[in-house]
Amino acid sequence: MTTTIPSTGERILVVDDEADIVALVAYHLAKSGYRVSTASSGPEALEVARRDRPALIVLDLMLPGISGYQVLEQLRGADSTRDIAVLMLTARREEPDRIQGLSLGADDYLTKPFSPQELVLRVGAILRRVGAGGGSGGEQLQIGPLSIDLAAHLVQVDGEPVELTPTEFKLLLTLAERRGRVQARAHLLQTVWEAAPDIQTRTVDMHVQRLRAKLGAAGDLIETVRGFGYRIRAPQNRPA
Image (cartoon, rainbow, N blue to C red):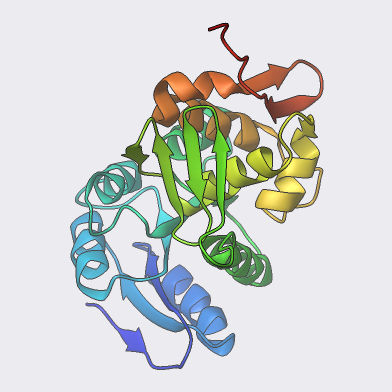
């Protein structure tokens, strides 16, 4: 059964088949001022997400019906839900499990058991990323075929729009604003994810990989600087 805790903040959907975890997470989020909806299965999560359009989903990966991975894939594949931020919850600590979720477009992950206070802080950090990057007066960055409209949160390559998650947009904007300068993985974690620098940097690598794929030919603008991190290079001018 889906429940809603009234408040005045942004809506968060908590999805887990363990009632105790749902109650714990919902309590701490509501205490922090969020409006909370809950779901206990994959199909119910999709139904509530389409109906309530939450700002963020706290998504367990091991769910009845369909898995959290499948829920995430369907969310990212639909126009009405592709921009909803997602924080994965997983009892699996193995790197491949985290990588799979990140590669499908999750914004962050947290392993069980977890601190409710840390979860609330991560939710806040993700939501700040969702609202970050809006410039004034339609400010726009142009790098070769890549165009970034800060106010509209719109990315285009050769005039064609590119759909990015909030975290992918913030990552791209961070690199673009520092064009030509190498950004260390630890620095990107602090800037984009607001995470301590000892958090695993594989998170950055997976998002860069996904970002490159979405940008197509313009993905080559993002260079890997071995042993350091990433940078966006200025495209070479072609002779007339």
